[in-house]
Length: 212
Image (cartoon, rainbow, N blue to C red; front, side, top):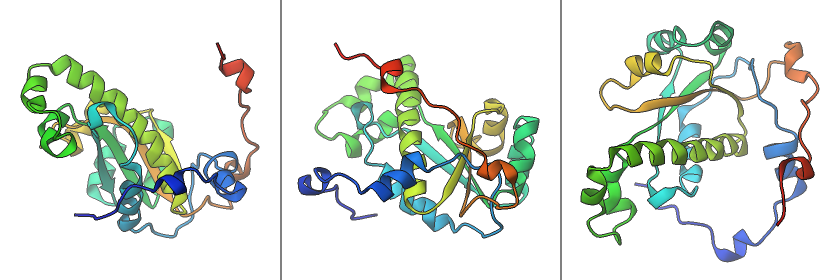
């Protein structure tokens, strides 16, 4: 079990350097084709050690990951992706199936020991657990993308898929439910013109927010 501790208050108060912000946000592109360099699954583990500090309802931490290296299992998953996503996934060095579990309450003794009786209380609230599981896992997915980038990787998240089909390949034993598939690599393929295409437009703050 990891002994990593949460960041100190002093660390949290320091603003990131512009280069770091550029790496995570303004300079980051969704990547569709990657270089041939393989990705060590240990890097995904390192990214998870960071993203797990993301906020979730009840500290539920419902995100579940299946890391797929090239092979028969990933090929079976690829069949359940949209046609446009199949070739790019087949060529990616590594693929992650990000899912959620509605059984997050089973770990309340570890995640929220101060909530006495929480596991038993949530057991009969299946609809609520589904909603919390999906919403909180999606928050964690956002942190996952940032964590992978922070560890030097490029990412290509995709939602064009048959979630039930993917589940039938990798989640039959655990009941996890697929949210998004993420291709991962060390860099965009420089031979791919799409890899260096101009960034798409973004809304300004005034278009996307209100201060009341």
